[in-house]
Image (cartoon, rainbow, N blue to C red):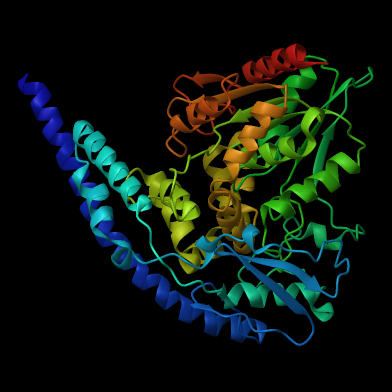
Amino acid sequence: MAVMMTRRAATVAGRWLNEAVSFLVFCLLDIVDSLLCLVYKVADYVFEAEWKPCYCLSAKEPITETRGKILLSHNNGVSKILTLSPLQELSGRRSKIELEDISETLYTRPSLLSDLSVTELNKRFVKVSPSDSECSHHHYEKTLTKNKRRKTITKSSLTVNFTVVEMLREKIRPQNLSHDVSRWSDCDCGFCTSWASTSDKDHSLFVKTQIPKGIPAKEDVLFIHGFISSSAFWTETVFPSLSATSSAYRLFAVDLLGFGKSPKPADSLYTLREHVEMIEKSVLHKHNVKSFHIVAHSLGCILALDLAARHGDLIKSLTLLAPPYYPVPVGEKKPRQYVMKKVAPRKVWPPIALGASMAAWYEHISRTICLLICKHHRLWQFLAKLLTRNNRTVNFLIEGFMCHTHNAAWHTLHNIICGTGSKLDTYLDVVRDKLKCNVTIFHGEKDELIPIECSYNVKQRIPRARVKVIEKKDHITMVVGRQDEFARELQEIWKTSSF
């Protein structure tokens, strides 16, 4: 009994310490990010001869530009960009953009001090023990429900962040359509900019294809990697294992827009629509894919669900690995902010939470990290090869982690992981009600990045989904290191899902 009391006291003290240190650290990071904003303003002007807009600017009413027209509608408090005129195909992209594709978490990220309300303090500090956590959470939800029932009168206003408007302008100005080169703080090596030197004017995604040897392919499989990763996550693990078993599947693994060897346009907002349409163009249309299986990891699960909702009965099976699904409470006014706080809780422990928080909350700190790591990835890869004696696994993981631009990572994180908000509910409902394909979910038992609860949340939404927890494995090792076993599991899923 005394031992249990001691352990509980130590746990409570540890949580309090984590909260206190986190508060101090992130208050300091708020200040550092503001200072870095000024530093990058000057640096951008020095290296690129122009001021670059950032999301630190406060929300302003949109200003109609001279070369194009942004038409806005306001319906039940929802602002939407209907179309950009003149309507035309610009660099293969549609000129129709909806503002709802752009997450407000890009430009609404309150500092820690300004974000601390009484409710937030209760959520951060009261839950120091499991029992207290459950009680405080129940009380919070009950209070929230009561508040939602109260009738309030709010003044309707239409405001759009000035930076978003500026970035949209860049998309419709003909003279800026060639601005595909990376910024000075991004890597300009041959690997990272290979897409810009190809003869492919459509700038399709980089797709690694594996065709069966000696036998015709009977089915197609699309593999989608996760955040700050690349197609190598599949091609260096599962592909060789499937090839060794003489499988009759045509395999496609893509580098998502902004990652790996795929295009990294500086003017892209990396919305869910852009990512999915690039996959459709680069794989489904280009390779004449009629029906297919999907295997997706982490962030890729969101893209997979969007594809499933779009293509319906063409989906033969859906295999999701660590899906980042955080159900938004009913009545939550800011679903995207809610998801961002779940993904990036502004905690220093565990370390992966610190990394996620720095990447999501701080535009300029995250850019500095990309400057130090991604721009100099060749140096880090060289050092890794020396230290690991050219370990193949470490090499491709580092390559996937470091070969992207800050613009791509920043917008993808906010517009997809945070920006989907309650959209995932709709996609999951479509899979549940309109699709008949098998849904299988894998999750590592020791995954500290995305909790196992996310997978069970998906199952709760799709009762027929099967969840398999991989013991003693984390977000990466659920595949890497057990690729042969995972390849056999995939083949079993595909065999039982063929039609």
